[in-house]
Image (cartoon, rainbow, N blue to C red):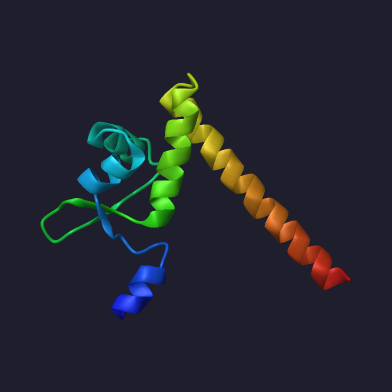
Length: 101
């Protein structure tokens, strides 16, 4: 994968845990808790350090937003999973309607 492609790839694990936490205004512990809850699964560097993609950072930011509103972490993770499933179902529905018409 070329350097240019990596910059455009939302799934490329470009961010260290420290940088990700800084960008989100949270702690590394919060990111670890999202990993433990299986909401996001960061890739590991050769040295075993967690690396996050832009896509994962968007999910983590959404989780932080929900938790900051007073929702427990496990419930926030479930909300995000359900939001993702709904978005996928709506996308599939729209695709089926296009194919039908």
